[in-house]
Length: 155
Image 1 (cartoon, one colour):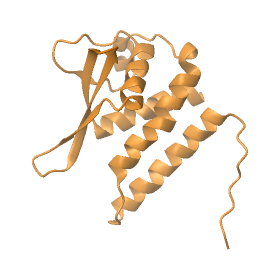
Image 2 (cartoon, one colour):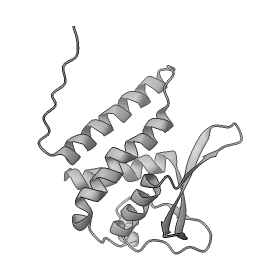
Image 3 (cartoon, one colour):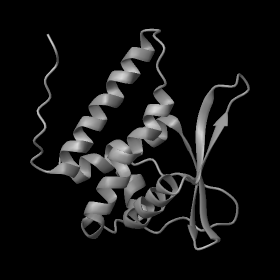
Image 4 (cartoon, rainbow, N blue to C red):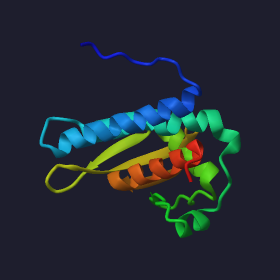
């Protein structure tokens, strides 16, 4: 029996984000069971549905919560590389991360066993780099989860 998909979306961005999160979970479970699955590739693909689309759609409603408050609330904040300043708030963090993913400003970092362990992302203003940060894969997923909970109002 063929699968049937319900194609109507009440809210395209929110529904797409929910489905993206679900698909990521399926790939991760498939990988945990020892099956061939590219969970890191899916995590980065999921950034489109969990970061890029929501950030673009909700940019004006993303709060300017200070980074220190986010840390106090349990958010994982990327470690800034070099002498670049840390973002000042959640709105700026999501904008910088969105820009990094959307413009392919991303580098994969492996550990000594050649397993992907983290990503380096950066924001540019024209040709000038304004921010570089490194995130572990679990940290990226945690950050995306917190952001999408905020967007989906699942606090």
